[in-house]
Image (cartoon, rainbow, N blue to C red):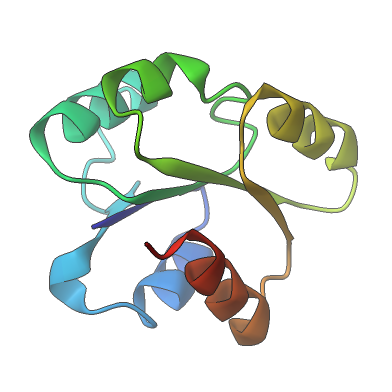
Length: 116
C-alpha cells in the first residue's frame, strides 16, 4: 500500500492514477478533516504501508513515522523553492526526492527503487 500526503488534489490523483485503487490512500481526499500527523501515524500502525510520498509542508523528518513502521520508505515531493527542505528530508531518512512537477517516468523510477 502506498500513502500520498500532499496538498494538491491534482497531484494526489495523478499519482493514484498509476497505482491500483486498492493499493493507494491519499491525504487530503480521503481524510481531509484529520490532522496529517495523526492520520499517517494511525495508517502506519493499521496498514502495511510500503511507501509514503509526502510534501515537506506536512513534515520534513520521517523518523517519528519510521519508529511506527521501520520498513516503510519515505520519498519527499518538492516544488521549486523547496530544495533546502528536500535536502533536509533526505538527511533525515527520506530515501529519494521527486521534484515537481512529477512526471510518470520519475515516479516509476521511485517505485522500482523502493520495490522489495
